[in-house]
Amino acid sequence: MRHAKSSWKKPATSDHERPLKGRGRREAARVGMELSECGWVPDLVISSDSARTQETWACMTNELPSPLPQVRFTRELYHAGLEAVQSVVRGVDDDVQTLLVLGHNPGWEAVVERLSDQSYLVMKTGHAALLRAPPGGWAAILAAEGEWALERIINPRRLIEEET
Image 1 (cartoon, rainbow, N blue to C red):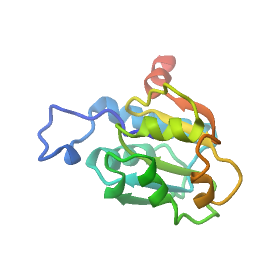
Image 2 (cartoon, rainbow, N blue to C red):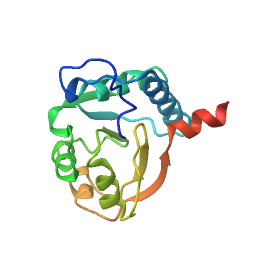
Image 3 (tube, one colour):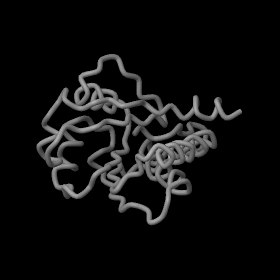
Image 4 (cartoon, rainbow, N blue to C red):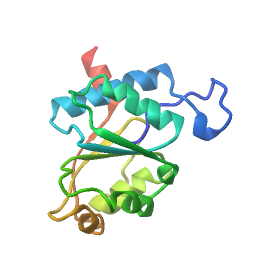
């Protein structure tokens, strides 16, 4: 998942510290609701440690069932690509069935494209790509580029528009 819409108006000491807009908070909550409704609630979350990814996750948690999954925040996913995702996921226990990796563009579109072999994907802010992994443990399946099935891309803006 890519973080929700961030604010460029609120003062931040750096890009890393930039917060979400009100729209981003609403959209993040709606993605959390959608993940819950469609049965894709994560067992574990690994996220960039930026302010906007942490806030995205916090907004999502209000719509997820208890108990909430463990979450790990890491600088390694800040503006990262597939190699960083492979690095942070390498140690994930094979008991984890559903993993949410939360980060940024540039990079996130390339991660989804390389894993699923689907070209020209757009991962706008707040979008979540639901990918089904091939059989195997996390270390092995992350090396299986092009073998993941892209089930769906959640577009929070479209979900909210459909509700009104």
